[in-house]
Length: 251
Image (cartoon, rainbow, N blue to C red):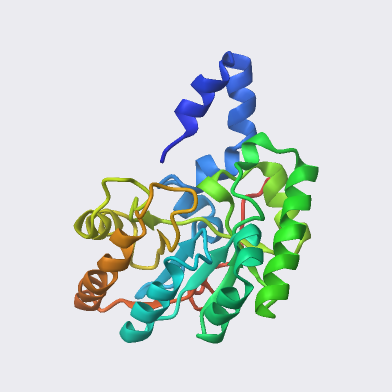
């Protein structure tokens, strides 16, 4: 899902254009690197050691999200669900159910579009629509925001802060959006990331991914629980992760 080189090539831009794109996407390029955990830990999702922030993107999805809620309840875990406004409008009752189950609600945008293709004004409008839809569905005023694809522009970072949203990316992911993802591959990929004190990204919907790929992270959760428990790591939502409120100086 590393789309940055492909995006540059696909746009057919030269050295000057590539340099401009790099500046435009600087927050993502920094935060999603190992260096970013030190430069901007708050943006990267670094929190307290001994704790893991568990997050899900792209829902709520009637075909899959209820099954995640069931497994999370069995494990005694609460997580942060970064919802799409468009999905919340389609399933407002399910969005409310996620909140009622004690999970934290975040914003993933209104539609699943890369910020690198949007103007700051378009990003602000998208955030406003998402916030309205998610608040209306859940009764919750979201605090956290994660941009689709993790592609965070400078305009997007500033827009989120003006909307009183704290942006957080991730330090480990299951690469569960792939058609060939399996429960074992999801667990292995997560544990290859920065986990102790980190933020884990999974998906509770396949609305922007390979069909039925959500089944891999769902089946991976009990196995992941065993691995994290063996490392004496606690699991919870982003809001309990102790993330410092420090972002890039450019923000």
